[in-house]
Image (cartoon, rainbow, N blue to C red; front, side):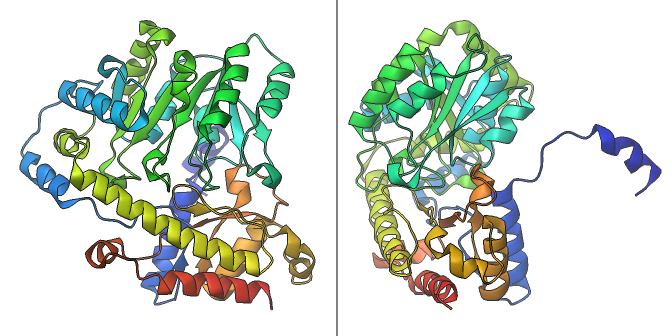
Length: 417
């Protein structure tokens, strides 16, 4: 280590490389070295962005002006109308912030407040905790169980709120559904019951609904319908539109949270990403126009993800793995603990050990449950079932899932050795 690096090292922050991005890069390196890899570690929608939206981006490529930090006014109105239609809950264009992906928006929402407790439902997406810490907040985890489908219950939430060490601090809960990493979601009845407890304890909620439009039955319900005064909804184009690299996210902040909070969020945005790419915002006008092209695109995705998810879960269950059938998005969260004894005989006692040995011996790439807040000894992992050609699936009307199923079968055979 150089003298400069030695001086700097003790003062480095705690942020590390995102584990989801890291596994994607590792998988690509293995593929580049002609190694057979089943890429179940990184959750990128394989379906292409609809051509009419790509065309809108092409036509807007000449736009180079800065846009308002809060986002193009026409786009905010288009988004408000779109989500009011699909979520059956009124979105106010004046309360929408367009960001460079929902990821940075979630950080901005946390960075706009001071000295808060950030409650995370475990398991939860890998970036929530490091973002909360970067924003200077205390992270508190609420553990869920396989028996409850890895979901937060009103009783667990109430017990957690009553047991807080510093109840005077603002409490912000991040709730993600359909879930990453679990692929499950909440019903209207479940959300309504959670809303009662949230209201009782004055909890602010970031409702991360980035997979909402990929509810397999098209029945996504927003928490904001039942707890409008305290629910910030985040979403964007990365998952339902297959446009992750375009980096366009949406946050809807309820008017009841006050204009000062909205302006603080916009202020953080102005000092970080300034504004979303101008051509992308103009192209997004086409994405947020609910017509037959969009509804047809969504329906094909939902049918495909449901079919592959159900098939994959059934294969894992037959191999003795505990896993729930998915209800939205494109993830499974298998629990390998029923096979703990046989895995321990092979020297595998942790989720990291499981995923490392699995990748080395079979080319199957998963992410360990510890990346999502689970205990290091938890034999859980996330499986993203997106390793198929989405463009071909759109052309033919069904996905060629042979490679993906081969990967699941390879995993099952390895488990049963």
